[in-house]
Length: 221
Image (cartoon, one colour):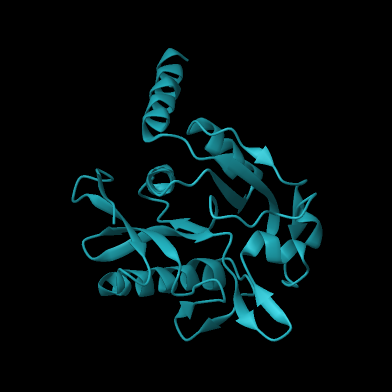
């Protein structure tokens, strides 16, 4: 479990916590609140056609071997992301799921284009996938959530992380010091345009150094 305080506003700090299931079940109330926030963002606000039950957005990738990076402030979840190792699979019968990008490529997810990757995405214990990234837009904590995710992946020996997001998201990854590698071309569906890409996990020191360089460029401009 990682805790990182973020001075997001003048009233109280945001804490970013890594919750790894099933070991951190005592903190599952934060995961439940994250699922509720996902429903508000993706279903209620963006009108994405996602599976949801009552007030939560929950799908086949929210299993009890999942890791969540969750930001909270004064007991309220204000952002987060989901991490899954790519070598694990689950399901039964004729349909077995692994992770979102690969399952879309295999045609198991009707809502996502099958051509989002040029080649079969990997399944190995050093490659992870990050999805369902959300954050309260008033707090400016998206980059901090990604920093904590990278630090966790570095600590557990991961070598690469795969992402599915907008082209702007890939540019943000570059600002944080990663070197994004496209897995395919930009594709789109009713929810918008997005791209699958991968980044090598880097040391937390490299992330900090990249932020300093970016800050220096802003001051000099």
